[in-house]
Amino acid sequence: MKIKQRPLTAADLDTVVTIDASISGRTRRSYFERRLAAAKREPSLHAQFAVDDESGLTGYVLGRVLEGEFGRIEPAMRLEVVGVGLEARGRGLGLALERAIEDESRRRGLKEMRTGASWRDHQMLRFLDAAGYRLGRNQVVDCGIAEAKLGAREDEPVTLGERDRPGDHNDYGAAAPNHFEHLARDVADVHSLGEADLDAVIRIDRRLTGHDRGDYIRHKFHEALSESALRISLVAHKDGTTAGYLMASADYGDFGRAEPVAVIDTIGVDPGFSHAGIGRALLSQLFMNLDALRVERVESVVAKEHFELLGFLYRAGFGPAQRLAFVKTLA
Image 1 (cartoon, rainbow, N blue to C red):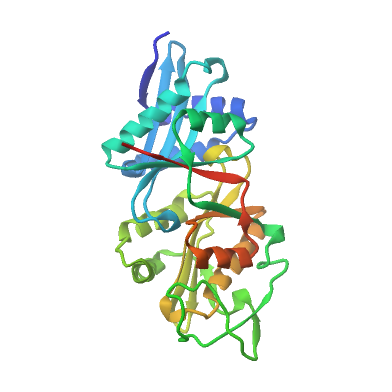
Image 2 (image 1 turned 180 degrees about the vertical axis):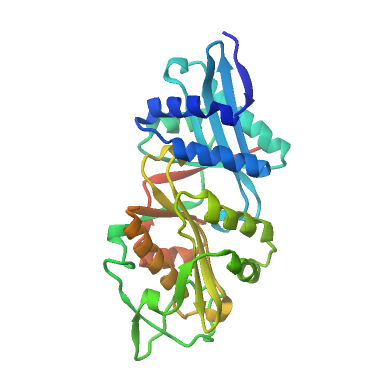
């Protein structure tokens, strides 16, 4: 049977949604609509392919370029979704689609493929093994909103130290003792990210990373304001200036998810506001917002050697997720 590989197009939407529903047991049309529209607007950040046989489209794969998410400097391709119709399985179409997105990644000069999967998804784990992925070194952490130590239901009081106290250049909210207690989200004016915050966020990111990642920040702003199913990215102001920010998205569809999950891509605190509880304020407001939106879980990916950030997230109620990070080096 003749198989043809080609780029995925908007005209494929109905078939992709039908195949996905046969696999997942539910319709995720809005997710695929957003992904296809995003690829049309920013083709350099997306790679999407389909395979056809005599009956038409039988499989698809969607990928997105990781630019600076999770503290990255070098870009990589994230394998987001791969699906093959039930009647077409067993013919190696999934691996063919994965190779197509690998070849496109090499053409763009990318050196890694990355993805994630639940340790219980045995079928996906077998697929990733066959495709040559290995277990990544980063740690996936998550937190149930109802279990969070910060947020709407049970916010712990925090103590504030002096803003200019010396410390780690990106202290996410460590506190020093004094005589006053406040709820975490009350230490700063925290609200939804807006276009007016772009320059300040770029400035803070440059101070923290030592790199100019303006293009990445601009792309994340566009996603936060127009592409995500829910607008949940936040910025914190204190003493009349931008003190920190949190970039996050809430959607379902990536990596076979069937329920909305919030994903924290980036969190940054201006070094001038170290030890002022800004990171805790951002997380607290995020948890409160997600609770109101009935998003039950939030996750992130953290480099195993980033002890300060891991410690901050663990103190906020995060722990090892049931998902694993996978990576494949492209020769």
